[in-house]
Image (cartoon, one colour):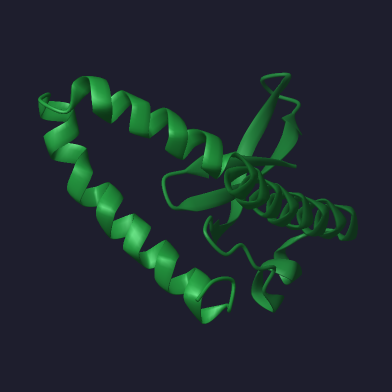
Length: 122
């Protein structure tokens, strides 16, 4: 079993041996949303027990990677903000600065609101 990411879904792919062609044949067994992969009962019924264990392990790994990416983003945020500030000081008149500034301000406002709701600053 392997996992194939396709846009917003992950395909669960089973390889079987075809004696006629003497090659492995890949067939998609099921699909899960990539944003929130869940092993439903319907999918579980399509898989063998070892495949179920593989899918559960894959989902756990994906969740762990998402958590670690989030933590890394938080730990690097102060440094990245400082780098961005220096870049904007040097490139304030560029099209990139004009186009990205509104997105950055919107994200910054959401972050401030989240930090305030969490009681992390007054």
